[in-house]
Image (tube, rainbow over the protein chains, first blue to last red):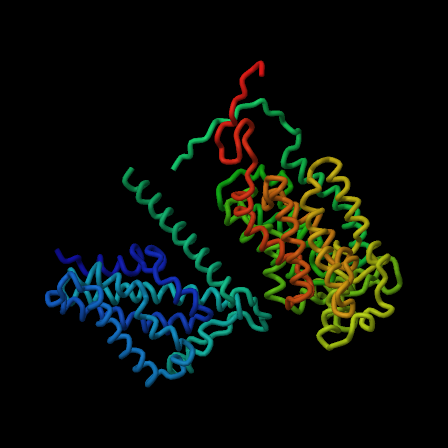
Length: 220
Length: 361
């Protein structure tokens, strides 16, 4: 039975969120989120890959025999990531220079293979593409949120360099949150990634616990 | 998996020490060095101390409320003590937000995310000190020469407000800043100046021992810190194992290296008296929560801290390595506790019962 579109979206963005619920793909998460711009760029790149791989794998799911599915999936994923990598290098060169190594490494991002295995290989192409999109957007949300926290605390700005990396129209996002800020270097350095992730996860659990209490009170 | 172990039965006796009492005794032991430090560096130091301890208590209250724990545990004094120790390890004329940010980091990140008092893996005050040192290297390494509170060069309350809070104009700290002994030695060595020239005329071990020296708020006077430490040892709040092992861990490699090349390595006495060695040995490394439980483990832990302090001071990027060394050995504490286990009475080291000797033989 094909899941409904609403459930797919809700699962990707919140209940089954890559970062907040599945706690997958933490390596790119911690590595690129020193600024919100980097997080947003990496998130969008991953989203493009996820939607495309889910679509392709779902379309090929009757051709690929179960015994060789993992290598076959990886081949498809690697091909698509190479396309995205080249495309970003061509049209978003500034972003490419910052994210650099992490774009090809999307191949090894466990979320991509995870969704291929758990969703795309069992569902029709359109829901699969939607699932990839939803999961990708959920991941983008997490990357941007953690990037924003680290950037605001670390350097007092938000979406710095957005115009340069994501294109001139995105320049409207660039803001200076705290003028004449001295900078809290710890948040930019790797420990800041772990700290921000930890506090965001705690915050999500707090919200979920509150929602569960409300639901319990409503039924009682 | 539940290990099959014998139940250990009593008789047990209560040592009579409770958590609030331990905290109170440590505070009493810290008082002489604190009062001396506050007097030595004047009003800015007093403001910084008040802000740091106050923020630590406020952060503790906020965390306890958020976690739904009773506020009564505030009375154990651990928040005051953590803020206190952090304040003593800061440069005395640091701006107020250094103390406030540090105290908040110590309480929230260093202690309460682990579950509160007794659960933390790392010493909260040292977590905060390292976080501050990495994030704000300028403010955390700007020391001033002693300006005793009643002397002519001491800033009055109004000037002190400018130093600490930036009220009424910003104080020009660069004009009064002065290098600590370890920092001075490090920069001179990096320039290729031999130690005998670098320290010529500026170094008196006796002054270092008494505490009339450039340094962090409460770390300057080895004498008063030793007095406080002696009190804690006499009361058996701390044992001698960690401090002794730590001091030897610093002094032995320092003596060996100094004997090999006195122009490149500071003498062991300087290492033992300068900056936070004594403070760390007696009041930081001995933290009951983050150090090993067995005596042998404490010796390993203390020696590890000492050697790391020497290594970081000598070859590291920072002139002082106390906080880093303690955090690294904190991380090793669970491992040490696994390795060094006391023998259960009546059993050998592997937990097998000892052979029973027949009566009458």
